[in-house]
Every structure is written in structure tokens, then in C-alpha cells.
Length: 237
Image (cartoon, rainbow, N blue to C red; front, side):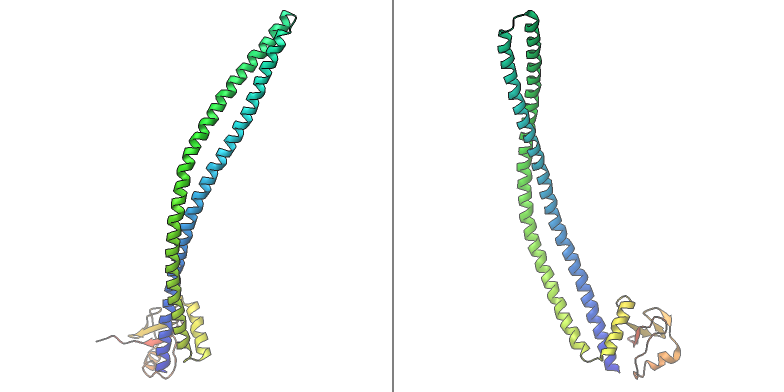
């Protein structure tokens, strides 16, 4: 029975190592995800600037079309003015031309604003594109490094799983099942040290007879309070 207890203790140590390795692996995967999210955010911001430029360019094209149409209207009105026969008609056409020229002036002002906005966006886009490419390249290198770390941790996990399988070969299936259930129920700790009459798993006092029976190593004994399998560990002198 002492040998089984030693094997169970080894099994618990292996499982705890695997748990810690998996936590470390999850942390590395989260870091890698964060790296990718940073690149995605930069690309999304770049796409937003490009969409803004596309929108302003479309507005500029529309203004240019309106500007051309108004200039044609002015030319037409000026031609019509020459053909007017009355002073009233002449004044009416004159007002049309004045209004059209005012609108042309406003359109030209808006066009200048659009051109300025496009130039500013082009400068910002060039800087952001360069930064995005630099970030993507740097992030790709960091991702490769994280993947290597994750692979190394996985290799350790795989080795510990093989270790675990070798340990469990020497134990009965029912005992391994009991051990696994206790681990799930007791936060990953199926075994508890018994010392000085106490279970160190739950810090509760053990019945004297049960504690004395631990010295005999005749059977697997469990704590009546937390149900963990007890392993007697005396203080080192």
C-alpha cells in the first residue's frame, strides 16, 4: 500500500505540473492574441482613414461636376443676355448670372477645402500605412516567438502526459478514477498530508484511531472532513 501511496503522490505532482503548464500556455496564447488584435486595430484604423479619403474624393468629384454645370449655365446665360429685348429681361438674366457666379465661388471654396482635406489625409495615410506595415512585421516576429514558446510548453505537457500514463499503469482503473474525481472536486488536490493528527488539506483534526492507522500503510485512508486521500508525512528532525 505504501507503494500505491507513493505512486498517487507522484501522480498528483505530475497533474499539478500539467495544470501549471496549461496555465502558462493559456497566458502565452492570450499574449499572442493581444499581438494580433493590435495589428487588426491598426489595420482597421487605416481602413477608416482610407474610407474617409474615398468619401471626400467622391464629394470632390460631385462638386467638380456641379462646378462645371454652373459654369455652363453662366456661359449660356451670358449668351442669352445678348439676345434680350427688354430691360426687364436683361436684369433678370443678370440676376441669374450673379447668383450662378456666387454659387460657383462657394463651390470653388468647398473644392479647395476638399483638396486640402485629401492632402492632409494622404499625409496621415502614408504615415499610418508605414506604421501599420512596421507594426505588422514586428508583430509577425513576436507571434513566431510566442508560437515557439507555446510549442515548447506543449512539448513539456506531452512529456508529462506520457509520465502520467506510465504512473497510472501501476494503479487500478478504479483508483485512478477515484483520484481523478477527487481532483475535480478538491481544486486539483486529491491527496492531503497528514501530520501531528491533522489533515493539512482542510486543517481539521483527524480521529486518533484513523491517524494511528496511517502508520500501518495497510489501506488507503481518507479525511472524514474533505475526503482527500491521506499521506502521512512526519516532521523532519
